[in-house]
Length: 146
Image (cartoon, rainbow, N blue to C red; front, side, top):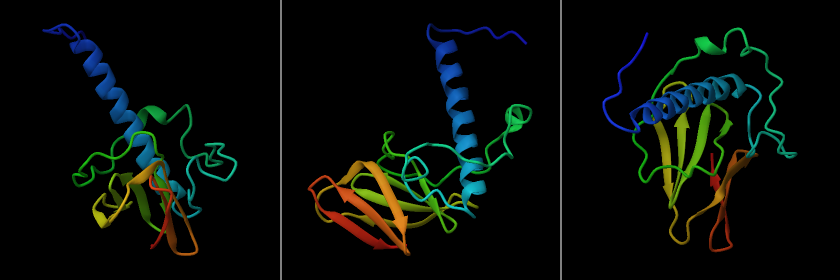
Protein backbone atom coordinates (compact mmCIF):
# COMPACT_ATOMS: atom_id res chain seq x y z
CA UNK A 1 0.00 0.00 0.00
CA UNK A 2 1.38 3.43 -0.91
CA UNK A 3 0.70 6.50 1.23
CA UNK A 4 0.74 10.09 0.09
CA UNK A 5 2.22 12.32 2.77
CA UNK A 6 0.90 15.87 2.70
CA UNK A 7 3.52 17.86 4.60
CA UNK A 8 7.31 17.66 5.01
CA UNK A 9 8.33 15.41 7.88
CA UNK A 10 5.02 13.52 7.95
CA UNK A 11 6.64 10.27 6.82
CA UNK A 12 9.25 10.57 9.58
CA UNK A 13 6.51 11.33 12.15
CA UNK A 14 4.44 8.32 11.05
CA UNK A 15 7.51 6.07 11.13
CA UNK A 16 8.51 7.26 14.61
CA UNK A 17 4.95 6.92 15.91
CA UNK A 18 4.71 3.34 14.63
CA UNK A 19 8.12 2.53 16.09
CA UNK A 20 7.09 3.96 19.46
CA UNK A 21 3.83 1.97 19.39
CA UNK A 22 5.71 -1.23 18.59
CA UNK A 23 8.19 -0.54 21.40
CA UNK A 24 5.38 0.12 23.86
CA UNK A 25 3.56 -3.05 22.82
CA UNK A 26 6.75 -5.06 23.24
CA UNK A 27 7.41 -3.50 26.64
CA UNK A 28 3.89 -4.28 27.84
CA UNK A 29 4.11 -7.86 26.61
CA UNK A 30 7.50 -8.29 28.23
CA UNK A 31 6.26 -6.76 31.48
CA UNK A 32 3.32 -9.15 31.57
CA UNK A 33 5.56 -12.14 30.90
CA UNK A 34 8.12 -11.11 33.47
CA UNK A 35 5.58 -10.55 36.21
CA UNK A 36 5.96 -14.06 37.54
CA UNK A 37 9.76 -13.83 37.69
CA UNK A 38 9.98 -10.07 38.13
CA UNK A 39 12.06 -7.35 36.51
CA UNK A 40 12.85 -5.79 39.84
CA UNK A 41 15.80 -3.60 38.92
CA UNK A 42 16.55 -1.16 36.16
CA UNK A 43 17.82 -3.16 33.17
CA UNK A 44 16.41 -6.40 34.56
CA UNK A 45 19.07 -7.60 36.98
CA UNK A 46 21.98 -6.41 39.09
CA UNK A 47 24.35 -6.94 36.15
CA UNK A 48 22.26 -4.59 33.96
CA UNK A 49 22.21 -7.12 31.13
CA UNK A 50 18.74 -6.14 29.82
CA UNK A 51 18.36 -9.82 28.96
CA UNK A 52 15.34 -11.99 29.50
CA UNK A 53 15.53 -15.76 29.13
CA UNK A 54 11.88 -15.86 28.05
CA UNK A 55 11.24 -17.29 24.60
CA UNK A 56 7.57 -16.41 23.96
CA UNK A 57 8.55 -13.49 21.69
CA UNK A 58 10.81 -14.47 18.80
CA UNK A 59 11.61 -13.48 15.22
CA UNK A 60 8.64 -15.46 13.89
CA UNK A 61 5.94 -13.80 16.03
CA UNK A 62 7.31 -10.34 16.86
CA UNK A 63 5.31 -8.81 13.98
CA UNK A 64 2.09 -10.01 15.64
CA UNK A 65 2.61 -7.95 18.81
CA UNK A 66 0.00 -5.34 19.60
CA UNK A 67 -0.98 -3.05 22.42
CA UNK A 68 -2.70 -4.76 25.34
CA UNK A 69 -3.72 -1.50 27.04
CA UNK A 70 -2.96 2.20 27.24
CA UNK A 71 -2.34 3.64 30.69
CA UNK A 72 -4.23 6.40 32.37
CA UNK A 73 -2.61 9.78 31.75
CA UNK A 74 0.58 10.25 33.73
CA UNK A 75 1.48 13.87 34.31
CA UNK A 76 4.13 15.06 34.00
CA UNK A 77 5.30 12.43 31.51
CA UNK A 78 7.54 9.64 32.84
CA UNK A 79 11.29 9.97 32.55
CA UNK A 80 12.46 8.55 29.24
CA UNK A 81 15.83 7.68 30.79
CA UNK A 82 14.47 5.31 33.40
CA UNK A 83 13.42 1.73 32.70
CA UNK A 84 10.12 0.52 34.03
CA UNK A 85 10.43 -2.01 36.83
CA UNK A 86 7.89 -4.85 37.25
CA UNK A 87 7.12 -6.77 40.41
CA UNK A 88 4.10 -8.52 41.89
CA UNK A 89 1.65 -7.39 39.19
CA UNK A 90 2.72 -3.75 39.22
CA UNK A 91 4.85 -1.67 36.85
CA UNK A 92 6.73 1.19 38.51
CA UNK A 93 7.70 4.36 36.63
CA UNK A 94 9.05 7.70 37.74
CA UNK A 95 7.56 10.97 36.52
CA UNK A 96 9.25 13.59 38.68
CA UNK A 97 8.19 14.56 41.27
CA UNK A 98 6.02 11.40 41.28
CA UNK A 99 6.46 7.65 41.45
CA UNK A 100 3.62 5.65 39.88
CA UNK A 101 2.56 2.03 40.21
CA UNK A 102 0.46 0.73 37.30
CA UNK A 103 -1.52 -2.51 37.25
CA UNK A 104 0.14 -4.57 34.50
CA UNK A 105 -3.15 -6.24 33.54
CA UNK A 106 -5.12 -3.05 32.97
CA UNK A 107 -2.71 -0.10 32.81
CA UNK A 108 -4.68 1.70 35.51
CA UNK A 109 -2.76 3.66 38.11
CA UNK A 110 -2.72 1.59 41.31
CA UNK A 111 -1.07 4.36 43.33
CA UNK A 112 0.98 7.54 43.01
CA UNK A 113 3.47 8.96 45.46
CA UNK A 114 4.43 12.64 45.24
CA UNK A 115 7.82 13.33 46.79
CA UNK A 116 7.70 16.08 49.40
CA UNK A 117 11.24 17.26 48.67
CA UNK A 118 13.53 16.62 45.73
CA UNK A 119 12.56 14.61 42.69
CA UNK A 120 13.15 10.97 41.73
CA UNK A 121 16.55 10.62 40.09
CA UNK A 122 16.74 9.67 36.42
CA UNK A 123 17.64 6.05 37.12
CA UNK A 124 14.17 4.83 38.09
CA UNK A 125 13.33 2.57 41.01
CA UNK A 126 14.22 -0.85 42.42
CA UNK A 127 11.95 -3.20 44.34
CA UNK A 128 12.59 -5.83 46.96
CA UNK A 129 11.21 -7.15 50.23
CA UNK A 130 7.84 -5.50 49.50
CA UNK A 131 9.41 -2.06 49.17
CA UNK A 132 9.96 0.34 46.26
CA UNK A 133 13.31 2.12 46.56
CA UNK A 134 13.64 5.53 44.94
CA UNK A 135 16.90 7.47 44.72
CA UNK A 136 16.19 11.19 44.95
CA UNK A 137 17.92 14.15 43.34
CA UNK A 138 18.57 15.66 46.78
CA UNK A 139 20.79 12.68 47.76
CA UNK A 140 18.14 10.91 49.85
CA UNK A 141 16.62 7.49 49.41
CA UNK A 142 12.93 6.75 49.77
CA UNK A 143 11.57 3.33 50.66
CA UNK A 144 7.86 3.08 49.82
CA UNK A 145 5.58 0.19 50.70
CA UNK A 146 4.79 -1.70 47.50
